Length: 273
Image 1 (cartoon, helix red, strand yellow):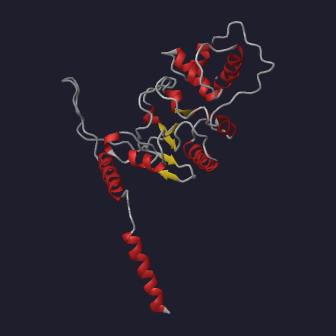
Image 2: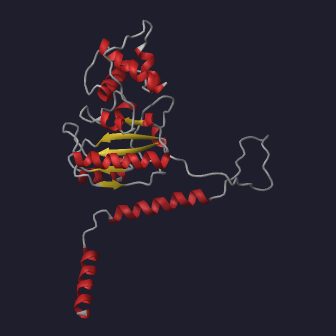
């Protein structure tokens, strides 16, 4: 019996050792690059003279009060690709220069591709409020979706569990759960109008608006001011309005805000103030 058990264990070991490992090379590259960054962190700060008037200290003094920078926002994307496998391949090719911290497949499988404290290349050029380097302060989550299909229940369940963990771990403010399209209006449209932002807001990940039936707009209500307070980049007001509609009204439309849409914006503004 013992010999038989040993034989089975041996076969299982050989099978696992010979099993395909499609990302073995890129995983090794990840570890190598992480070690390089760790080496940079271990280096003693070097005095650099910027002018003749600057005086170098005789000894280096290192502070004892520091820690890793923590993410303060979550940006949600859809992959706009054909499959989760294609997305993983894209994020493991140096030539693409794009990445994300997490990828969630249609079946709910969650890939954690990058340490949360490291800077992923997911947001690109964008702006939210006074922030212009979104990559440095955020976590990027990619949902396997081509932009035309509904998001799956399994996928959303995994996302909700992940968001709960991220919000608790890093104390991310409720307002800072955003769409890629929010921080890059006109350039990005993900996730699509099919994404259920209200589901997230009801759980504390982003704000949503209350009933607007009895709302009366103040005579001096300024929609542009409201959009700016929420965080939208107003360098192109039309793009900002489209991004607002996509997120909060599940609509892809152009033109000025209607009276009903202004009421939604007015109610939301109070939550961001």
